[in-house]
Image (cartoon, rainbow, N blue to C red):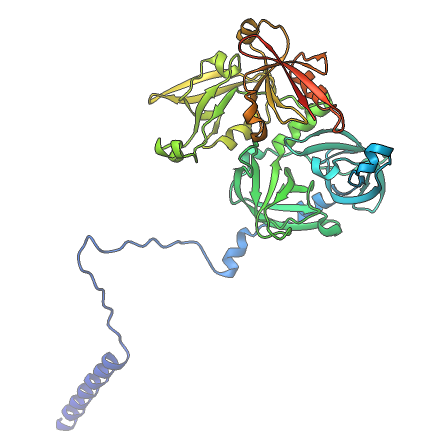
Amino acid sequence: MKKIASLLLVSVFAGAITLGAYKLFFEKESYKWVTSEQETPFLSTSNLDTSARGAGINKVDFTLAAEKTVHSVVHVKNMTISRGPSSIAEFFYGYERQQTPQVGTGSGVIISPDGYIVTNNHVIANSSQLEVTLNNNKTYEAEVIGTDADSDIALIKIDTDDALPYLAFGDSDHTKIGEWVLAVGNPFNLTSTVTAGIVSAKARSLSPTRTQSFIQTDAAVNPGNSGGALVNTNGDLIGINTAITSQTGSYVGYAFAVPSNIAKKVVEDIMEFGNVQKGLLGISAANTKSKAAIEMGLDQLEGVYVAGVEEESGADDAGLLEGDIIKKVDNIDIQKFSELTGYLSAKRPGDVVRVTLERDGESLVKNVTLKKQNSVILPATSFKVMNLTKEDKKKFGVSKGVKIIDVPQGYARYDLTNKIIIELDGEPISNIEDAKEKFGQISRYGRTSFTMINANGEKEHMILQ
């Protein structure tokens, strides 16, 4: 009995030692340092499987979009004739300048089975001959159907008896930031090159003087990609690759594409009317980066601040006023001017848009009928002119002509603004289309004059040399 008691005591003692050793060497105490309940951080943990196997469940597949696109993207070769610089001998003896052939290359996208191709205007500009090579290496001569320098979109066509693979236009308004995209083109003459990236920004403007609204992407785009396709993972055409920003001339991380809704509208206008029909709202927007705008807090504004309303424009007819803030057009939220111009670029004169605006803290809705372009930049002079209003015709006593509303810095000393141009070299000027055509025919070697009427009703003459 004593032996059993001794064994039991030894067992209990050994167990105590074993438990103590485990506590000492193996079991670690967890300490939570809390200074107060208010300072206790709350950290949210995702329940998603972040392992390689879990991440692959929703893996994006580019193969179908690439297969669909590469056969619809073509190589465009532009052959131009460059004339050498003029010389004194040319003026006196009529020597012809040396003609040098030059070749430029780019890309294009087939948009119909019968051979219509959309590309960039700068890809085919000044061409004397255009050559298009398909992905199957067949080569065709192409003709220019129409161009639009403002959007940098051009439409060309090849003739073939074969039904060609083509891409359908997607809706670029529904493209989202962060969405995967493919850029397909012919960089550095490397045919059918596909790169992938995401949409990194929308409604991007690269110029303070032009109304631009690009899709920005980080897909690698290089010289030769211009005019190629930007597609989503379904293979829908959502943009025409157009530009890069680079100090080296090659891709450094940013590329820009004309949204498909703008490109489609330009193409449809060219095919139906022969030129682009621009539906304008008729407002000017404040430069939110100016010192005055910053002092007014406009640089923090979400929307477009109306700095002016053009007479007899759709905005004027609908009752928009200086100081209004445009917040939405139809169902599109507007936070900056490039978003407004980007959306309106897909509209035509006569279209009605629903404009939601803020005026004195109150929300208003105006239905605005877009009108034709009322101002242009004249070739040779870069004067900005507009059609005459009823008040202009009455004030100046004329029925035809164009009004100068802005001039380049070099002409500022002549005080030309608000004068009416009525003649060019003795030929009457009717409207902005007539003025643009006539000024476009001015010879760089000739002596040209135009006639104006000033605010006092007096005629003035200016000679261009």
